[in-house]
Length: 104
Image (cartoon, rainbow, N blue to C red):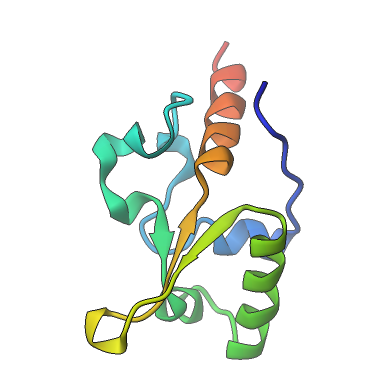
């Protein structure tokens, strides 16, 4: 059974920023959706700012998403592009299950 998640409006917005489009999560296969393209599953702070969040808002929303196990955080040096925030495999599968149900 797929784990369920409840997100606020801001959490939903952040988890769909950058190149992330939930509509492409069509199978409960985690990161194998979207041909395994990493851009389909992660964002960074700059993506959040481009989506309209302030740094303080980002800190709060990211903390909440991590607590809910919606994202996993990958610390990277700035030279490597900085920290990445990955949608968790269980969250991707949750969205895929919702998409499958909606398309029945």
